[in-house]
Structures are given as structure tokens and as C-alpha cells.
Amino acid sequence: MTQRARLGHWLASATEARAAVISALERLPGGAVQENWRLDVDFAGGTLAGRQSLVLRHRAATALGIGLDGAGEFAVLGAVHAAGVPTPEPLLLCRDASVIGTPFLVMRRLPGEATPERIVAGTLGGERGGLIAALAEALAAIHRLAPPRADLAALGAPPADPAA
Image (cartoon, rainbow, N blue to C red):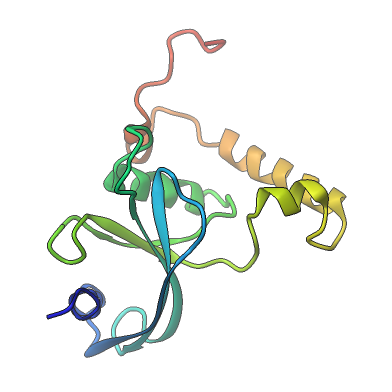
């Protein structure tokens, strides 16, 4: 069974679908710490029935030893998404490395572009003030997540000195 077939089988099983047909699987640019893959899937029934635009994310082969493991990232993404931070909704976590060769998580794919050069140059179109306001709202939502919280345990304990 090919890696793509194993992934489709796992996705169907994890979502209780009769089948999960992968129509696109393409590595997205960037990612020194994590690899991100565009994943378009047609689910026959189950919890994600229909066509879904997703992102599969896993630790890069040349991991830098920084960042959270998949389970920790999945938990933190869930907490910040639930708090209203504009971040992809985490959907599935696979700890079984035999599916694609490494543990991974699957989240919804959001529209947009994250190319730093284009953002800084202001060539994405629209008003830059809107981006600033959106960033301020996102930061405010993050600051409302006051530790300690079980869903943020992967981040470690807050420092004893808040200024630290």
C-alpha cells in the first residue's frame, strides 16, 4: 500500500467516513521546523463529509529541536482557535508514524498568503491598516488565554516573574 493510500485509509478511519479520496497532496513552501502539505480530500460520510481543504503538518526531517511536538501543538492550536484567534482549526492528530513515516496533525486550510516579503512590501492588496487591526485583535485574544490551563500545558509553566 502506498503512503498516499495509507493516509487516505487513516483519514477515513479517523473521521468515520466510508472513504477518503485525496485529490491533492502538495508540499507548501517554507517550513524549517515543520512541513506543511496542502491536502484536498473528498470524504464519503463521516465527521468531515464532503470536499475538505486541509493542511497536513509534521515535523521536518531536518528538525531544529525547537517548537512543540505534534500533540502539544494540536492542544495549543485548539485552545487559541477556541479563544477566537484567527488560526486554523485543528481537526485530527495521528501519533502513528507508520501512516506517513512520522506523527502528524491535520487542520483546516485558511485562505490567504503568508509570504513575509509580500506582506512587508504591501503588495498583497487591501489596506495595511486592516492588517494592523487584525493583528491587534489576534494579540488581544491570545492575551485573554491566562495560564495555567490544561490545554496550554505543552507551553510549560509561566515564569514566576511576570516581567521575565
